[in-house]
Image (cartoon, rainbow, N blue to C red; front, side):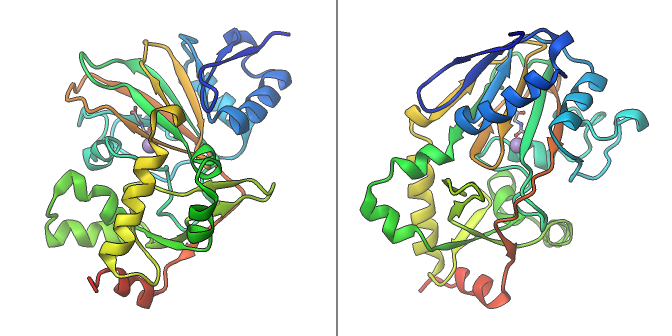
Length: 295
Ligand code: OGA
Ligand code: MN
């Protein structure tokens, strides 16, 4: 065995012990695949991958995806490595990076299969803040009282970028709103996603802006309550980074956020693995209109 996985908490988290030389082994890839389903998030402490090795690991797990436009600072060879940083020299769109302060699922407002997993490696840490929290949305569903499960099981949620960045900007300008509209879709996603293997998880996050068929405040109140439920300590693993750590999470069953930081020196390198399952579709305009009515 060149790989072992040590559970962190009963509901979430695993520490993976494997040498970088064995990162691409079939045994490693198979173990990572199955442990991601069980543990939601896996940490490779101080494995110190290069961009090339991170991309090779990403490619072994599935199709590489880059749903963020190419940003200044990304060189041609590693254009699929997205720099998560407040340093404008490396990332000219800090809006998105600031959006990571709030619970979210990567790529949920794009009309494509939901990205399967995200790989993030720590290149430079912040002086303060910057721990990343992960909440298991399978556990959040499973542990709900049966009565509540029945009440929410068939609900549909509208997700949009505008909601995702509302806590970043407060009142975005008209120009900014038009830009958000152009760059992503308004999506309808099931609140409770039944995956192809039959397991169920919640789909939640700051990008969730209302529930189809409910007036805005009713939907948003229920979403806020569920988000708070899903973020309870038993379902959450907080990763306090060390330089060189690599973390991979099951983006189809986990939401995440980072503890705010201001340090422009923090740099994380992100790669994304495409999903095959597409729980949602573009939103129906009448449904969207409804969630912006208050009664
Ligand atoms: C991301 C993300 C959190 C972090 O890369 O998608 O949310 O800790 N990052 O930077
Ligand atoms: Mn993210």
